[in-house]
Image (tube, rainbow, N blue to C red; front, side, top):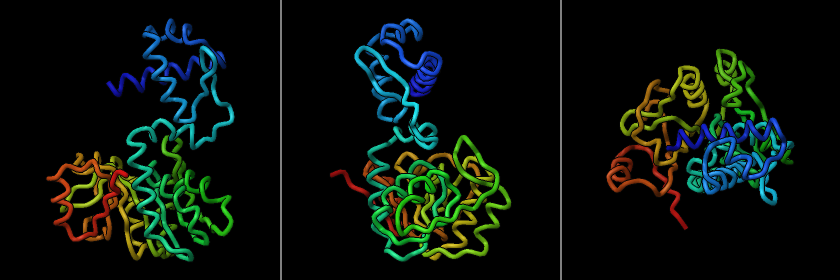
Length: 259
């Protein structure tokens, strides 16, 4: 169902790209779905910063940033949980520190939560983090460079990995496609795993920020073994069994509880 919704929202967005603004009736006819379905999709895309609803229809937001356009829909997945995780993670940082950030929507929200922690020195592979923190007074932001991946808005490859070799961070915030208790953090591709390893090697402390759906998910490429993880920040959606398993691990567990 989620895949169907995403595909339909892609088609809806494409229709708006062609016409700029459309009525709900036109969107229903073009997508072959009910008015209720279209209105749900419009609400989701509006929250993602893709469009603005108008009286009886919707129009694209032409001035939305590249980050919002690319990450907006991904951010909707576990949005509240990611925001809570980010706020809890930001409490770990003290002004004056050097912070390393990898890419991904949860780390993007960590970057946003760090705005009040200036002055900081920030090392990152992520365009989203540069956009969030670059304009903030007191933030010194360094981006690795490398091969740019437009689907993730990040930089990967040998030069990106090498950039971290001569750097030192007080704390690194990393996401992952999977956290397997007893094993470590996994990525879906080798390039992302290599970045995880490089960031982990340069940081005095490594903090994994992962929502509960990533814990126990199938892993592919090991980026950071568990012994390199100092802290895991996650949300309150954990099952009791998973929470108990994480509490038995050597890293510190922080659960961003629901208010």
